[in-house]
Image (cartoon, rainbow, N blue to C red; front, side):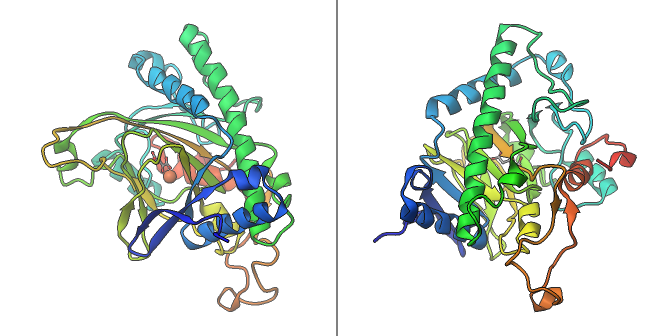
Length: 356
Ligand SMILES: O=C(O)CCC(=O)C(=O)O
Ligand SMILES: [Fe+2]
């Protein structure tokens, strides 16, 4: 019988991203569930990236979120700036173009220099869990009716994505041979981050300036996994292949992309990969002068911020060195880790603020 991951979404230079029908996990019998779970785990192990379809969120819901996102970014800058992103600890609000540069460089001063030279060509709006003392979301609900709609839509979508996150983690647990609910107690707080992204239209000369201008610089994600919704029109996302080339991972209608992040790699003692990716101008013909806008939505998932993350049982040999199959990393607190990483890529973050 054909495996659940019979379809392939992307295959080039040794990078192979399967397209998995996730309904088999959400609604299937034990055997179907296990088949999807194994395929999911294999994808995170081999590529760190996977496409899924039939993942339980309707296309109307996703379209409505994209519509609200476009509306929001269409507001005048003065309005968006009233909701400005403040600190990595809060990680909520509007980050104007030039505020963040994702990169593999971790030294904060070098990142500031990189931002000055070639900032990411994007603006984002960050939404966190509701009800966290001292860190309210920066909602535009006092501005107007559209702001109220936006707020209600995003509050709902945050929780919808949280449910999917918990199910994806269950599939990984089963696929790894753990109890299906192993990750539940690490995921139930919902210390996640819903990021709306807008890459404004750019004249081709911007990308030809020789300054490594990109929409999102090459990077790995920080947390456990990321659910990535692409707007279905304009590509540009690229994933690093084992050969070091960057391969297009285009939008495929009815699918989302999921990738595993650095904490997942640490947590699984590198059984699971955290793969580099970037966003460049969309594939285009020679005569295009202005590259169109791109919208995407990333739901960054993190283990509960109060959890200590160390190698999952079964992924290491007790008492051995890293080279001999022992633990490759010391344990770390999830919230501390995230704040450290955010502090390194956002501009204007006082360096003393790096403890959670
Ligand atoms: O816009 C995208 O498609 C990807 C963005 C991304 O990788 C990120 O924000 O971490
Ligand atoms: Fe990313």
